[in-house]
Image 1 (tube, rainbow, N blue to C red):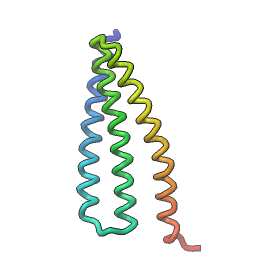
Image 2: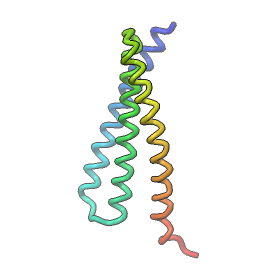
Image 3: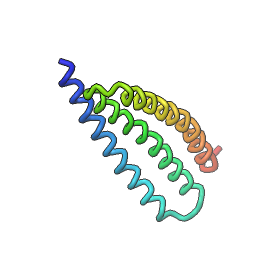
Image 4: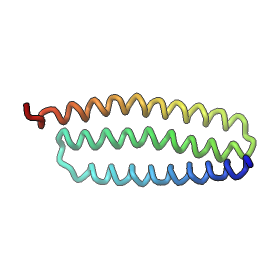
Length: 110
């Protein structure tokens, strides 16, 4: 029963990494065409959030792949990287949320 679950985790983690890489590429391609203002900075920060998240998800993918091979040291290292980058993404998302709220304040009518 554990083997099919591990295979599903490996495939879904790999597809998630691939989707994240494509989203990163599209975000930075869209950022290049914008003029240098606060909106471009906002989109660029979302790209940084994607980079941090995709590194964490890719570490998760590698963790699930190496878990089936019995590589204990590599699995432990990848697990720690996975947790570190997901925690870093959480912290950065708090900062990014604050930036988005601050960006929208001049447009609100009182």
